[in-house]
Amino acid sequence: MKSCIFLVSLILLLAAPEALADKFQCRAATKIARLGAPSGTTVSITADEDERECRFSIAGEAAGSPPQDALSNALQGYKSGVVLRELERGESDSLAYLLLAAAAESSIPADLKELLRENSKDLMRCFERAKATDSAFEVVNNKGLRCGKVAAGKPFEAGPLTLEPQRARFYVVARRGAKTHAVFFEKN
Image 1: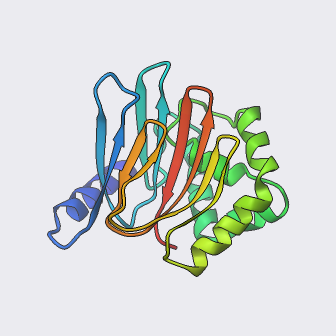
Image 2 (image 1 turned 45 degrees about the vertical axis):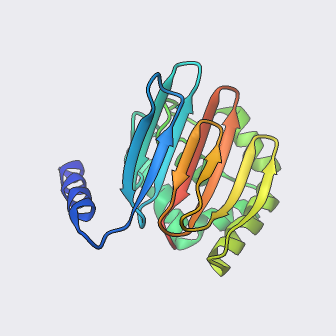
């Protein structure tokens, strides 16, 4: 029932003439996969170049991924500042769940957990800066991890993923071998 209500809401948002829609592309699939989503919606994407698969999650809805309650709690944690407090403690489960919202994995892989833990201070600075400004920036761009904000109207690429945002978008992208996990956050 919750999914039906979400889908109806999404269709209404997409049909509204004043609604701004961001365009997402994934080139990992045999044919390009495309998604349009309202600019005010969190979107997670997993591109698996080995499996030639693109998976999308909108607003924290599970796409065959971690349990729905973990995703809902993680998205609420982003909105309420829990993700930032976790990063301050060197923890990253909520952020990892959001990155995996469209992934096939049902638990957090050790290599992703380690990547986020190693970069928790930089990610914390990135989250703080995202709250403070609508200007484009990139704080983290190393070791398979990117974090920043892309400007409205400026195409953004990360591996096989492309975003054409209508509004500034805060993002975190993690690369693990042939998999690229990205979360593009709604404005907080």
